[in-house]
Length: 411
Image (cartoon, rainbow, N blue to C red; front, top):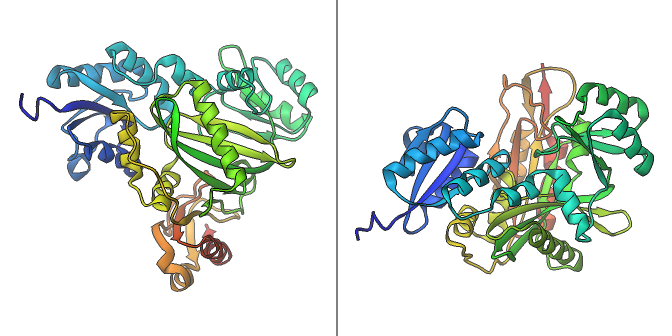
């Protein structure tokens, strides 16, 4: 049998060829004996697509039927399929449906839905005694009134399946609730998820899972939580990966992550759990996704352990293997850059020269806002700086310098 015939066909699915997305497909291409095939809505061109052996474009790369038609073309050209995978949150259930259709290993639709459908996720977790916010799937305004009667204000309203905080609202009083219910109009066919608002420290736990067992984990801390940042436009959000995660509090988070992936049924892959440490010291699960975290957090997870995190993900989902153990060698942080005040475009960015002079050696990646850039509606703002050092104190001091120095003005 020729070497080419022995290659395993791995299909990578994404709507668009974003740089952060292609880092994962390149991780697949670096594996031994793998032929990477792509299904995209708009496929990468030129050098961006060079690591794919074949590419198919489909009408809707989030629709399982459309994805399946693209996969069928690739199967006809290249033969049996080893894996069908992708890293975006809205893709996890469609990919599971397509895997089941083609008889390919990986999370099945029921498992994917336990991670994707937030109400089902939390019902499952609570039924196994795992701590998470009290919640209710609202199908009418009266459901919201009854939920508030049980848990009190504040509450959180969000889509029943989603990622990030863009469509998430903190509700502090009856008037705000009534206004949002009029806007969101929950029905049985278009429900809204209501949750108890959890107060306390917030962060994430990244988990490398093989055979349902966590092989490695990483802890991050959000400074402050994304929902507070979303509600307070002048705050510049920070995600910090501390140097030391061997303390008892961090180990408690890791144990909670292990129990969570076991209950929800993830076998092989990378998971992203968001946790809360309540004011009384108790832990609660915010939510968990059966996919890697967003771009900078994924990258920092690799940096602090001196590992190729994209290869780590690829090895887990394709080879059911882990090249470990990990050793935590550094601290890291991403400072997201945004301004405040009126305006729709960036007019000026102040302080970057001083930041470069004072801490430039700590910056390992940057996306800098430019005059004329449209103002972002995300709490992640118009740009970011990623900082890395062996000392957590040095990283924290550098974060303070960025927050005190960089100013974005709009027009």
